[in-house]
Length: 254
Image (cartoon, rainbow, N blue to C red):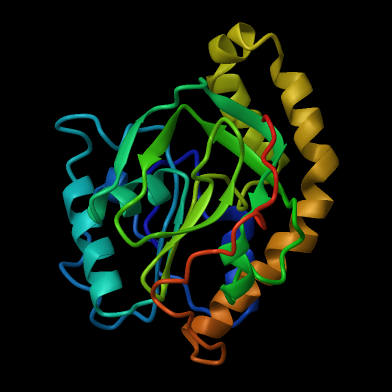
């Protein structure tokens, strides 16, 4: 597991994966930890979020290695999960693009909408149609890599979740945070919250209201990911067939 930023540690996701029998090796390159050149000896790869910009040049000195590992993970079918910045780096590593979000920052408790392809995905199929998530991003994936499968969307941020190949998932949103983590983000982003017409207290309160729902939905998701890592859950087809016309869920603002 790669932790890109001390403000976005494994938190709840780390606990869920550990409880599901996954031994975590958390690498913190911002603190000087060296990243491996390949994934030999690892059964999975998880890349967490952070306040950095995936498209910034030269960017963090370890981002090139992270992208290389993400490419190797897909090439060698290593189960992979990218969260927020991690999802953006996953998309970039395979030819997708990342830029400042056209609709501006997306912050707080939100819903995302599953797309038809999610019904053929072992991790996303059991999710409700409109799962609760926590959003905290200023940038977005503006173009998915060729062949990527869109799994969740919303009107103003269309690439909320996607899969590359048969084993790599990207989530633009957060499932790992608790109220304390969100409170820290809110304190650091107070100026942005002012521009959005809200306060840190309001954002934290709104997130606290959905944390039980997030646990109910995303804890089993993490358990399914752990089962996939152990080979107990079938992998999806690398590329899902095109959805039937007219079956997609309507999108919504958020």
